[in-house]
Length: 606
Ligand code: MG
Ligand code: MG
Image 1 (cartoon, rainbow, N blue to C red):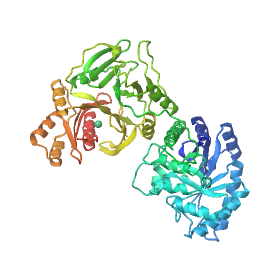
Image 2: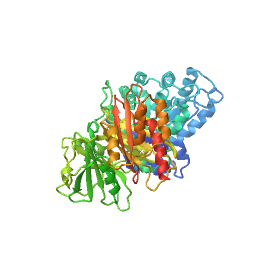
Image 3: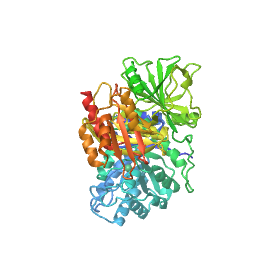
Image 4: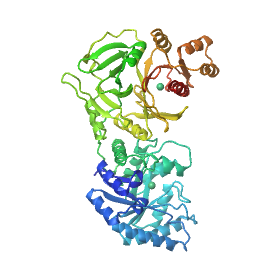
């Protein structure tokens, strides 16, 4: 059997009927009906059921039923009355499982036996309506806030209609060990809800209500979590329950597709876990491709890329010629290749439009992207040109897949250029920094980690004069491919968009800065105050700091003595370049200097 997929309607924007249509179109098998979505809908329960049937969606769960147990006995009849009306409603909807969350507001009795007895009586009532109760420990429950206690209570209730709901957020946010899930019989786990989340330090209720994410977008180990659940023999759906301020606003179908992608990615990870039997046979769904081995090329698209040509020349790039059939030029240095594309670029200011990656098996990588519903990009190619598979990332960046075994690849399509010099100071692409609007940032983290098999690395908030810039690195483990995904400040407005950049690696950044200066490059001006501070932070020789200041070079050092020497160019359109030199295992991106860079860029825009 395969696992069924489901999603709570609270994850999405729009009306209940909008949500159901989007969930079906995105390929979900079922949904959880979030009560406020139903209460606010003009559609009757029967109409909702009919719509779901037409859409071939099962209605898997009705949620939530609150404040059910741990109450005084004189309050309990009120709970029963409320429950009966909801059971009747569930019959009209044809839903057989209700989420009962642990009491937050009305609990006065901290006693497992009392909660169990009340759940048992609710279960007896529910059984008459063909309903099962999935008891869930909320992380902020008044007394029951741990799934192990919720299971003890359900076990004590000892009724076939009473089981538990496991929700990854409530368990992992509290740091509770998910391994003990394996002690629960699989047929007593009535429902499984999944959410990822960023590692935050804040009260757990606000964290849950605003910051849940789809699997792959945060930092929970959900594959291991699901593995424990499947080890019990659980056969219900994997259902997403994600409360998130952004997803409540974004376009409903696109968010549903993002959600579905997150489950495909997660199912594939789970299928690869070395799990003990019994468990459902999860098929390995995605071609097993590692992360890209290298950047293949970077494309700058512009109506007139002349200024970019000049800057690349100043950075020591060799002009490798014009494309034989398109208004496209190629520049290379070391392993770095930059393509300036003026095709179909009317009124485009220079923009980072595409990133090519070298992968071991382009067909397998393209197959993986396709199964993850990455939208394909088609570019017209001639018969004598390489036709690389390409996909559109959430921010519109085009992602190309090239064969690492064919390193020359498409380069011979460029003619009339010069041979590259042997003594180039730039050796390749260290990282690419892509800016994202608020709508697509989390989606982009999932896109690159799932489609390209990259891993989430460090994240930080950098202060710019226009707002905080949140930055999340996704990278290959070996560091050969690194992308910094930046969340542009919400109010940032500029006709060319938030600047993005390519950082070239160098064997000697100071020499590269000197050589670029001699070819006429004007680096991004860095204020003198920065260099005074640099002298205070690091014990650098004065002559060295003086030369850094002359060349606009910045510097950082890590705790292990590794260091980072780098400089930035001015911005053209929305594109600028950086040259970086890593020494001694330095693995960061000069975070302390990024704020200085953002301030300098802000001044240049004024
Ligand atoms: Mg839940
Ligand atoms: Mg950088």
